Length: 163
Image (cartoon, rainbow, N blue to C red; front, side):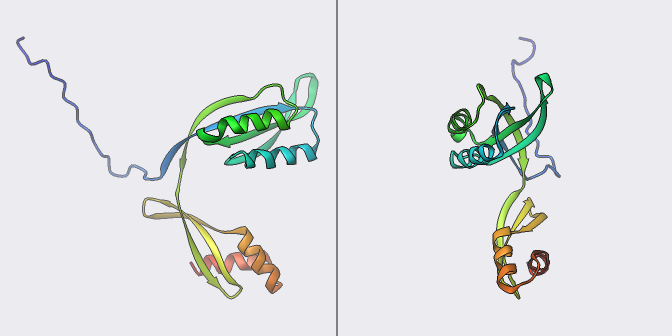
């Protein structure tokens, strides 16, 4: 050949690239128009027991102008089949839609704030070394608020002030 048969590639690490994590999750969905609130609550419990990361409901309008509920469950690959089975078993649906999504998440760490009401865990969301957000753990804050007879918001403010 008059020129070499070679491919050159350059791998660049761009400064300023977000360092938060990206993960792939499975989203399961079904629309229901014949289910009670109690049944929805029980189905949510069963989905969490099967490994769902999150479960939520959205009001929707279905065919024949029927009000209905869209049930959505976010899962890791490892628990998707179990969650899908739970949705089929514990709801009235005849089918579950499955899609694969990518999501960007903040790296997380837990710290403990020593407040006048006792210790309260605080979840922190980080993008690399940069603190993006923080949120007191509800259960800790609610227990402290009840024990000291103060509003939940007062415990939240103290916890955020002391991390």
